[in-house]
Length: 213
Ligand SMILES: Nc1ncnc2c1ncn2[C@@H]1O[C@H](COP(=O)(O)OP(=O)(O)OP(=O)(O)O)[C@@H](O)[C@H]1O
Image (tube, rainbow, N blue to C red):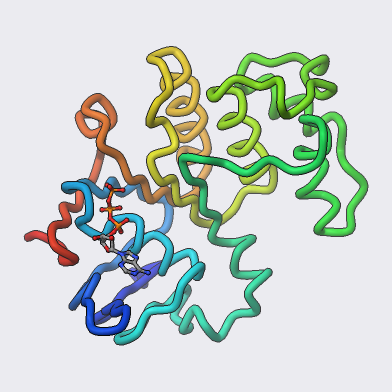
């Protein structure tokens, strides 16, 4: 089977500091992969390279067999979506954020689809008018996640999205992630959370900028 994402000898260097070196990795479509390792191991840097938020300084990363830098950036980011711990919300209300994926695609926001997405995290339509400054940390994270997945990406990269959330909020986030994984979205997860690691299907360990065999 051809890998969905393939990294060959990927390295990332800033000035004379080597942050990642010789990363070789294949990610198959529909899988869920969990990256673990000590703080500073390079997990977020690897995620940011795959998400094309930063550029690798050596090696190659392909998506569907083509170098990721050969894709138009906006289209690539729709396919490969990156969620991180401190989400940025836009505009004034939850509605502004959930309308956003439609607006960037020049489509009319589909209210039914937005309400269904809210239901998947046990929220009602009333929540749409809630101000972004009124949201709790968990709610902010749900809104950011829903915004990223309302149109299913091919790959969802989740970088410590449940860190700092309580057990109930973690459960909701993980339920959402496992649900879209079952629908075929490939998940790359970075976590330090013990229960998430215990539930992982496929663990990749990192240390000092390398994959640990
Ligand atoms: N642009 C940069 N310039 C200099 N050093 C950097 C840069 N980006 C990352 N680093 C360093 O690279 C190392 C890896 O950082 P990274 O955030 O990828 O680790 P991590 O495994 O995700 O850690 P954590 O689990 O704490 O989030 C760290 O030592 C970090 O300080």
